[in-house]
Length: 113
Ligand code: 5GP
Ligand code: ZN
Image (cartoon, rainbow, N blue to C red; front, side, top):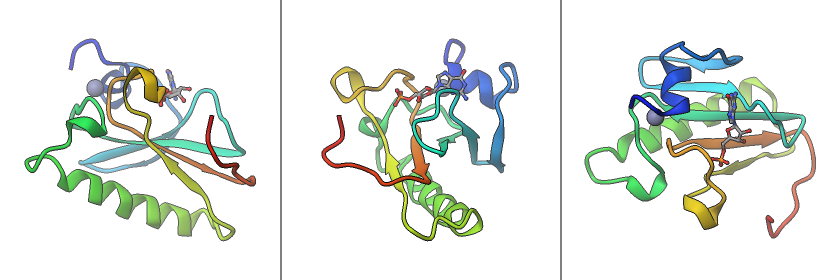
C-alpha cells in the first residue's frame, strides 16, 4: 500500500533494525521500545488490522505466531513475554498495518493502559 509506513519498511524505503525476515513476514525492533526487548512482527501483505482478518488471509496470523514462538526460544524469553495487537483508534493503533508487538525482559502489568 502506497502510503503505509510499515509497507515502506517492508519495501526497504525506510530503514529498520530487522530481527527476522522471510517471504511472508518481517520482524523489526520498535523505534520507541516499551520494554528491554520490543519488536514488531508484520505480514508483508498489507492488512489494516486484526479486525480485517478473513478466511482468505487468516493463515498468516498462525504463521506469525509460529515465528514469534521460534524467536522467543532463540532469544531465550524463558520467564515469559507479551504479544499485543492494538486495533483502531480506541485500541491505541497508530499504524494501520497489522502488527504484533512482542515485549520481553521485564515484568508486565495487568490491566494494560
Ligand atoms: P501501534 O501504536 O499501532 O500499536 O504500534 C505502532 C508502533 O510502531 C509503535 O510502537 C511505534 O513506536 C512504532 N513505530 C512507529 N514508527 C516507526 C518507525 O518508523 N520505525 C519503527 N521501527 N517503529 C515505528
Ligand atoms: Zn501496509
